[in-house]
Image (cartoon, rainbow, N blue to C red; front, side, top):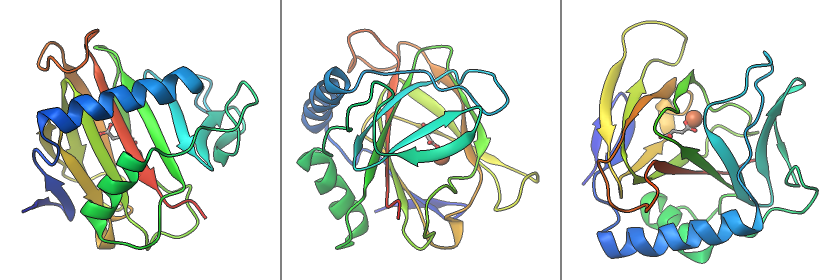
Length: 199
Ligand code: SIN
Ligand code: FE2
């Protein structure tokens, strides 16, 4: 069963260790085909996470703003979303509609992600599903407008969060990673996958 925090459904240990290991291998395969890159924010400051994507669309940021694009910065189309990732979406949401983007974020020990809304998608009726692998992350959840009180929860390897319904536009972010809290990724750090319906 999920625990709910500010409208986000949090499934602890949604993936067991075997499933996490398999998924980490699958993500490495995606990263081999579509190498991680560090986007620039529109303010000119590079993001601290490195990212890539699978699916028809990948998310991209530069001086021109945030948007979904059909190709990796190297010009090639993004690899397909792996079947095992689509199964997580099915299991977590029960929706027949499939995501069109699996964003892959890699957090080195010093990476973080400021409070933000996921709002570059066309239809906010579809949820965003997040999957955590590797080191623990302090995940902060705010409100549907900027500011106000927030609450935080540690996300661990194998945890899944469904950000949907009335909380679809709730601000969220990652304050910090706790290094060496997981043995899943040989080089440490954290991988977060977010699955989105884009159009
Ligand atoms: C995101 O909001 O895109 C990532 C959230 C996370 O890393 O848990
Ligand atoms: Fe987000």
